[in-house]
Image (cartoon, rainbow over the protein chains, first blue to last red):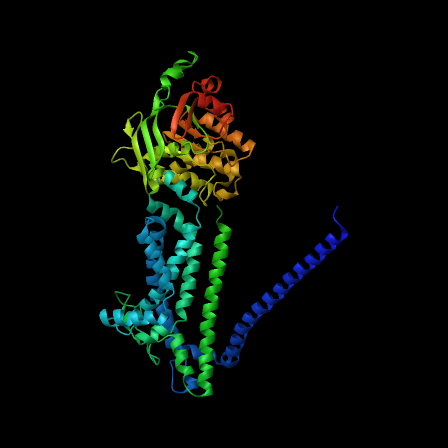
Length: 308
Length: 275
């Protein structure tokens, strides 16, 4: 028989353990709320300063010496075109590298070395990508201080993210699915194309969107390659009414982008330029948040639709 | 080295009533060695798998029975460091599927496989069955429809599935999923269907359906099945091969193997003394 004191001690102990549980719950909650609070305060601050500035005129005007007439037309068009180049380069290269490493490459020292270095690439400061792009794309390849150079720099920056996302989503597919395809006589390429890629689209798309939302806010590499801060014109249109209907001249056009426009306004004196910067910031953060939301929704949907 | 009794010898012990005494070998395995890197898993396996019969591979875990099964559709080629020695001839054409210049993909189109756990693709029931056909270049809608229906009927799944062919395969129960995998494997009319413990993840009722199906299947296709379940081997197989430590210890008619094994290891295993 256990004595009464045993049970009393057990109860005390239990109470103490529950108390420490409660303490952690509280500390954790406070810290989480604190972090969210900072983000909230940031958004609120931007909204207070910038919300009233966002209107059609702001979106449809070029930058100007007069704050009230200035807008972000060239900046958002520049950002949009940059993302086109970045996605156009980072997605095919990232997918190909991810598929190769996960499905084709032999597991040896050489591929282990490549894997480690992809992880390393993800950690390289973005300004170094800017320096590389300046030397390689701007001067060596003579692409100039253009959308092409900027987009390529950002593509290099986010390439590791796309590769890792591709590999992770391929890895979630059980090997029994691969074997099912191979046992029916599929080649590796058919297994990838008919099964592995379709089943991992959700995960890959999520990774690509997260990569793009990382790229969209980058300014350091763009400044390094010499993106201009004052652009009062749009790049040549990619579509034309006469043959050959498409033109790639825009790739070689000088450009600006939202973060650079913001940077320019923030560094100017005057209350009004500050609220321009806040308004541009609001739009940038709005784009980023909605991209991330899309990514989360996509991931959810993918998880719901595919079971093994 | 241990040699199996030649199958013709064991078959001659059968009742003369059946025409099966004249059964021809579908797959002739000769001196098969298999290596994972430097580790030898199969040692000099020689056996004749009879056509249109069910051949069971039994033996304790790690004896090489699944490895042997996966040699037959060259699944080992998917992973680096694996090596075969010997020959595996498939009749009637006598192709050595281990021969130089033989494409493993062609081999896999002749040998269907059903795995331990049901592994349908996350696609519709129809697309699961049609996939092997599509790989072989069948694209006509009508032909696909017909052959999908035929395969589902042969897998005893048609009645349950016909109203929902275009629903996801994962809405089926585990046993139905495994029958779907069987339909997928037989849709392309393979010469041989390889079953790797197909009921180990299923309940007894689903298991008995699969067993009935396998017995039914041998009317038109040669079946090889790896099983841990001796009763199952006894219920559904015509021939049984007992493997131990990578060697084929004994191979013969199932009834005789279970009642009158010639080798002491076989008797020990069958009577439950080890394994």
